[in-house]
Length: 200
Image 1: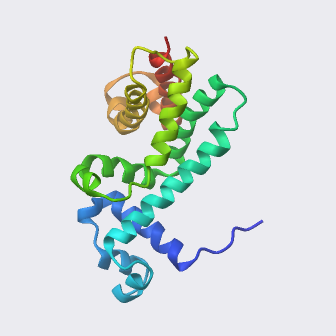
Image 2: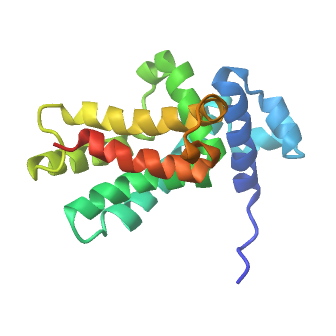
């Protein structure tokens, strides 16, 4: 069954996501996004009244997608160990399925610390709080190291996966580890190992 055609708003969000991922919030241009959507600036501004509103909409779409994936994969898992494994697998799957989104979120973390501090809404917070609650439950059950604050465990998991994805092309040229030859194999290996690192 064919997917329904994308709305003009969805097409704008798709193109804007790629521009923000490639150039960051500061470097992305509304004019370039409008051209890429075959619109003039007024047509783009009809849907999104400012660059900030467009950027927030892109982040909100990612937050909604991550929460939907969390509810579908993680919260429906039968046991807490399965939920923990599903949480890590979800990160890897999202990175593979949404490379521009993953790149945009990484760039957001690197480039926009001051903007995040001043932002009145932070679309990804609910996902982060739900992730933290899962890790706190895993600590209480003895599945994750208790001597580390849950936020440190979350940082280790997300940071390790993010860094592993970024460095794979360089590491593949430098090291003979077979898993490095395939992005999927490498990320699967790292996902398994990061759970070992945070286990008691």
